[in-house]
Length: 368
Image (cartoon, rainbow, N blue to C red):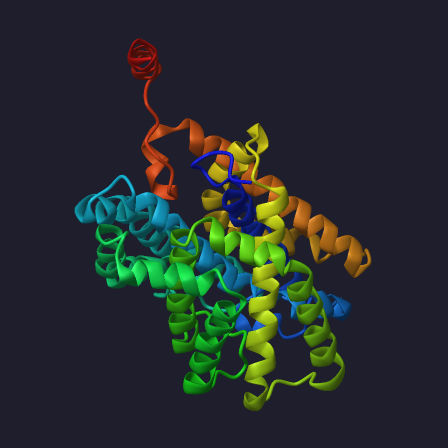
């Protein structure tokens, strides 16, 4: 199943998760409550979208935290702690700060202008809160991660592998998230942005994401073996949630956490089975995902301003807003990727000059 050291399925899952985030944010613009959380809301909402949104909103953000923890595992295999912190500062902290000062104010200004409000500098990270959390997790957990790396043959690592290779070990993961939900008592559960619930849930997911990859094939074979059970449980709990418990209540945290983790285990299992293959499309989308995430709110708000006044049905407007946002993001990415000085501002590596690339390729060929 694992054809190389690079896990293409994890790359695909990251790309898919960013895509789902973009679609979800477009869908918020078609909910009557969207304006309450800073979105431009359509005067003609498409409330039927709320059903698939409910399915997504308990696991889409935790999934990104899991994948981010997995990425750190791969990153530190070739780095010491100074190199890891420096690399993550360039790839995460720098785009986070650039986004706060240059990107977030743009879409906040569009929102104020649309609703004829006086603009004031937002002084908050907006949708980029996720990056701030990730950088803090790297700082907090890197001592533990390097300890595990140095003691890869020790009893603690062996214990982690043994636990996560057993079905009951996955129940222990679910239990850890239940404890977080009971301790923090979030209301609603799916409110992650700039909350203690989002911080601690993300910390847990980041840690377990690292441990999942640390465990090697045993974990992935475990989730693969039980994938249909995870999918059945997640689907059943979601059906119960939308039919019996449409409004959140703290005592339902057991159901919400179990459903969330079963969706995530399902995604990992099917991704492991079907997506661990390289492709040119994956290489392109994997690099584009970060700039698209940073920029998508600007193009989403512009799309809302231009398309919401049109006399067409909400489903048609949804498609138009989604397409405008996607095209705008990728057009901007095409500009960013070709201008070396601005690449690092959006989380991309500085691209070598053509001569440097040829020199490295020549050295590699001579080494062979």
